[in-house]
Image (cartoon, rainbow, N blue to C red; front, side, top):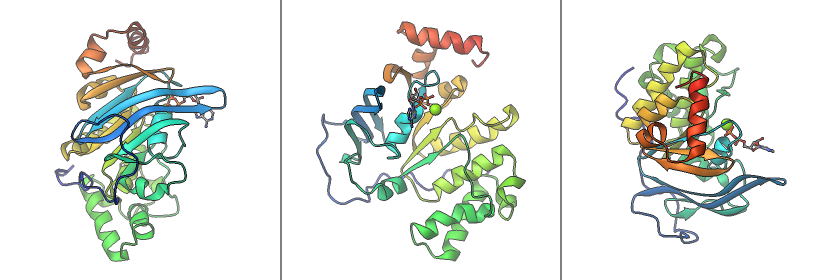
Length: 276
Ligand code: ADP
Ligand code: MG
């Protein structure tokens, strides 16, 4: 892959107007994203139970935890795919979780990539990447195409621009999905188990893209079951258990010398499953 040092999206500038509600507690300088007291219920089931999390600009946070612990729901709430039931989510100090707020301007600033690539099967790779900038950002057709080709080149996919998704490997499709998200120029990227659907030999090429994104200074929140990757890529690991952040800290500490018994038990299960 070519040098990805100038991938778009690491701009820290706000595209909103004046701030909405003040932060519930003062965020440290350089805080990009702040979750405070975030609660999410599905019926009687409390899935996120007062989550507090500050994410600094350029910080990479790995969310780990058993299936069902709330990792995807946390990411989906940040991307406004799920309304929250209590608490507040701030982006550059502005409340983005207010009910009734138009989610589209926020989603332009916060990109999300899922386990399933969700590419449009009837569109070529380059058209998949160029579509949203054209439709949502009203970018001119040729400019959107040029940007898409540039991004695909940076992700090592130039030769696949004219192909259709089903002609690509899973790893290549996931890299296209990342390119599609980056084409909107996001300031924050949310990555939800993006290697989980891939054959083991295709995981590396996708993780390489995440490494390159990190080098650009992209703020990232990623749910992963790749513990070695979490250790390498993240500034901080948050262990979720039943909707609470049971432990968080530097990866070496949380993964290597956890203080919480439930973190230890989770890591033991990961080791037993051969995933660490
Ligand atoms: P993880 O990503 O850590 O595996 P999830 O956030 O997907 O966890 O799920 C957390 C809990 O919320 C699970 O018990 C799951 O069944 C429940 N859940 C997730 N989405 C929904 C939904 N749309 N409706 C009802 N329950 C849900
Ligand atoms: Mg999940």
